[in-house]
Length: 463
Image 1 (cartoon, helix red, strand yellow):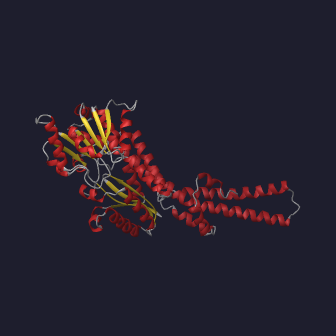
Image 2: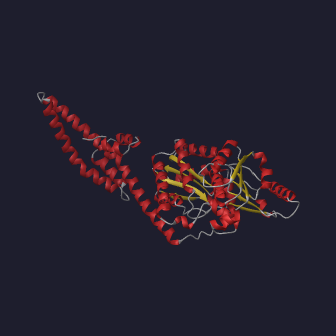
Image 3: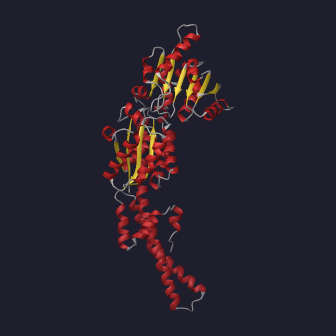
């Protein structure tokens, strides 16, 4: 079996297509189960963010796997296969590992170096585990990707190269290039945050740290909005902001009071229409006696979009959305930091590949040791029949001697074959071992299916 990823992102597809191809939670779950039902795939998981949709799978046939995964993405995204295909990319085996590790480090993000992707990778793995579609390969891969991403952020200066999408979006609204500019712009303003998920929560916390005077939180589930307000206002939160939860039906009225509006929900339709924004702007003017108002700043971090793109054309409104963020992102990080992360990724890919190749030999080694243990047991039984007068001490000594001899004979070849299996092309050594020792393929296959850890491997079949 081999790792395959088929996907599309802001680097290969227009934002308008990504928006149409976005997956609901139910669609992700259905896609995962349909992936496993497909003949070429043994396990799978989906990484879907605001600017990428990727389907990872362990497949036994490359071309059939690409065709099947592409078809499934088209079916569940609602975008026709003919329209989707030109924007799809395919990575296989080591290139697929390299791609995910690069994504985890923020090298493939809209804003290079942003760290929020790690949470999204963690969520993708959790979904695969919950749905029982992520097996040994994808569990190993995604857990290692999380470790690689954390290494990149802790051991290099990639954090200086970029920032989260939330921070970048607020910087675009503020017209500045750093936290100081955002703080000066946000100080004293009133904000409305629509949604209470991870992105909205991050936006609310960022605005609170930037110094806004008040944050209203609206969410379809009131309890989640109240929970976010509790987090923002609890002692030790590091912020001094007045926060309150509001009903979704009150969003229009709250928007008329707000200077900054951030929206990131899972809604499939528009949350804020152009007419709604115009109405809120007029209400702001009326509340101030009809005098000219400061602009209303709107940040749309949802995919598909929450805020009508027509807001771009409304006087008095300043909208930044995923599409404008993609256009504004110059991807000009510090070259030395990016090069350092790329070197880290290359080393980690090589190590992961070697570990996976070495792991393929383990079932064969375990089966060999189990066969040797059976041979020893059989010979000791024959000895008991021929020399029935042996006492327990003598029998134990002979048994231990035979086991030591067999163990020493097997030690060097099994250790060496594991080393060789970790090298490129090492999979053939498992075949050679099975052939040389005439191992039962069914026994090896049963070991392959077992969930063996290192302790199991060391202990099972000892002779």
